[in-house]
Length: 166
Image 1 (cartoon, rainbow, N blue to C red):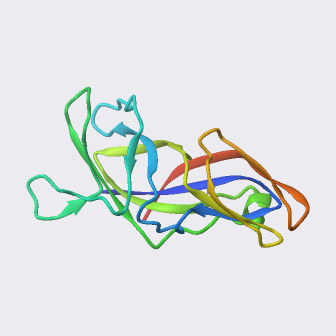
Image 2 (cartoon, helix red, strand yellow; image 1 turned 180 degrees about the vertical axis):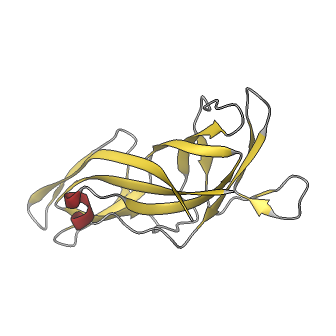
Image 3 (tube, rainbow, N blue to C red; image 1 turned 30 degrees about the horizontal axis):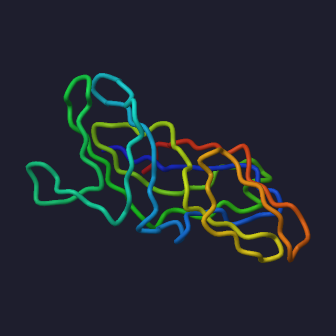
C-alpha cells in the first residue's frame, strides 16, 4: 500500500482558491489520470477516471474502492481508493511562491498514478470576490474578465505531481 498525494500548482492572475466545483472533497468531481502498473511498469494508454461518489466492490473482499483495473499488458489487477479531507484550494499566495497545494490523497495498490489531467468542473474567485464557476481547464488555461474588479483574470501554467506520502 502506497499513498500518493495529488499536488497541483499554476499561475493565478487576480484569482485565488482554485479547487473542484464542490470543494476539494466534491463527491461528483471526476479526477482523470494515467496509471503505471507496479508489476510491469506499463503506463495506461487512456486516462482513468475516478470520483468519490462511485465505488466498486473489492475483488475477493467485502470492502469497496473507487477503482479496480487490470493492466492491459500483464493482466495484474490494481486498486485506487480516494481518501478525502486532506486537500486544500490553490491560493494566490501558494501560486506566487510556486509551491504545490495538496488536492486529493490516493491509496494505490498495484498502480502508481501518473499524469493528472485538469479537465472541467473547477471554480475560483477573483481578488475582488467575484466567483467563477464551471471553469474548464482541459485546454490548460482559463482567461476571463472580472467586471466588478475591472481586471483580467487568468489561470495558466498548470502542473500536477503525485507525491508519496504517509
